[in-house]
Image (cartoon, rainbow, N blue to C red; front, side):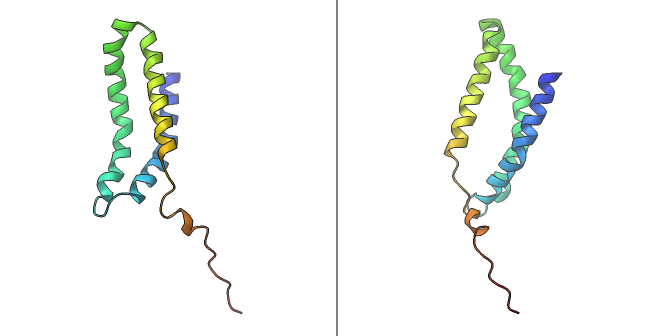
Length: 101
């Protein structure tokens, strides 16, 4: 139960940023398709994890769970490091201009 709560918090914490990032950076005309992917990631992860555990645990024992978690951690860290700022990031830093009195 504790691990399911941790999984829910992790997915919830990354969901908004992932949706925003994929909605801001797609090629022209593909915004909806790209923004839909983070919506599916939590569901796919919840479906694939038990399947992989069922396949790997009989072969490798409890070692498979740690191996899977390490793989996910490495892939997500590399993906995070490869992401660049969005093209809209500089817009917030520009001064708006002084109001005339």
